[in-house]
Image (cartoon, rainbow, N blue to C red):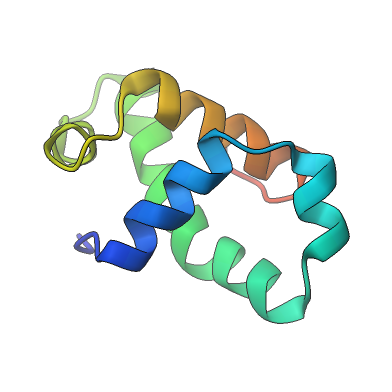
Length: 87
């Protein structure tokens, strides 16, 4: 399991509180690649925990750094609108 670094935390909080259409306009290949290969992995694991009743390790990590369940859900919805597969 990956650890959350400060950059990951900020990225997830930005996703949770942003309009995906604005993000999409400013997104380049490097950002989309990071979303898909790193942040997407974290959000996929978080999603699985919350939909399949798996361990709550990511949920606890999110809570420890101030990312609420609503923030996690909003970040997942945002990356989906940006074309990143979370399921």
